[in-house]
Length: 314
Image (tube, rainbow, N blue to C red; front, side):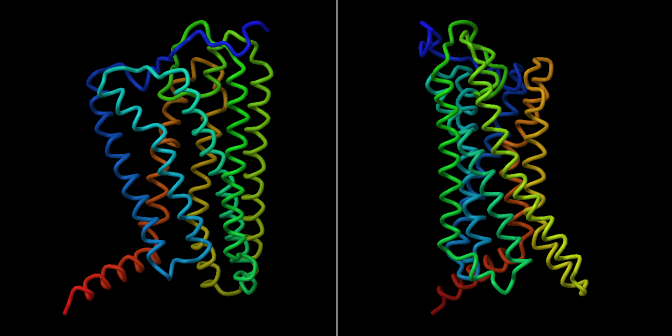
């Protein structure tokens, strides 16, 4: 126990996705474009929802929060990756590594609970349409979002306390492009059994709880839709849920495949590829699924543009 809370390693080396200089140049340009699209797209969604009165509803309030989370989540990874490519270095400080994982864990957990809240919103909208405005009040929506952030922060602080109790005195090479907790366990020279159990329990509880909320909400939605006599009503109900269900499937599907078997070093390349999907590409897919294919958002954008045009006429 004498080495508890002592870290000899001042920094870690992130191996990234490739060692090839040519591929690193390609990845720099690609990730720069991904980040610019994510920032501009998220800003566009948030501005559009705030500026358009017709989008002031619980559905778009949650979507606004999801866009903000996607922006924050991408900002944890991509700027550091771009700096490393430019400076031709792959190091991250000990405290920077822990801070990076803190935000990774917080935003991931918050998104889990936010997706569950969005599923509940769709359940109320379809299964209890007459009581929707009375149930999904602005106060409840704010409380659901605040609870998502608080639970994400509490979960992340617990993980961080577990990492701070570990010592790192040996190898400092992380075979990834960001600091991930299972990999930090492998580098620690302390007994990680308690921290690993805590990580598994908290991550499992969060994932299972939010996933069950989503599944139960959509099972009730399915039963309600099947009872509808009108084919048009069934189509409208399914189209209302299609975007959220697609995002949930991509999010949980990728997470499950990523973290199953991460303890095996032979599977780390697969883990890195899957991690690229949910850390870098999923925010853009969220924008495409929720915004580009959203007729209400397009209509709101058209009205804002027309309003600006007519406002300039004498």
